[in-house]
Image (cartoon, rainbow, N blue to C red; front, side, top):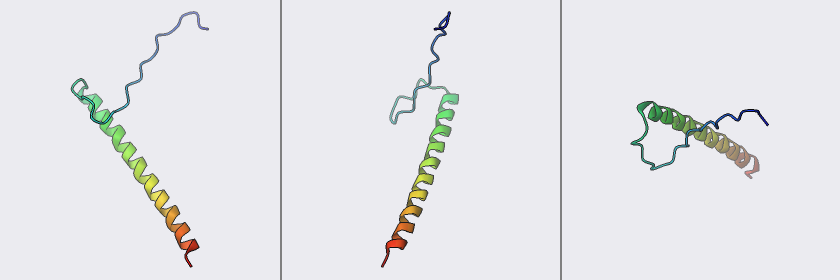
Length: 63
């Protein structure tokens, strides 16, 4: 145990759909947009990978 406990670092709350945005600054809103755009890109890449896998399996088992 440390001699002096540091104050816990508060993580920013994750974005929740429909939450009140009035308390957020422009920089915080911009950061959230960047975060959400990165997540959309990640989801689209997962869809592409899964579709390619499905198509490969479909063509392999096609009679």
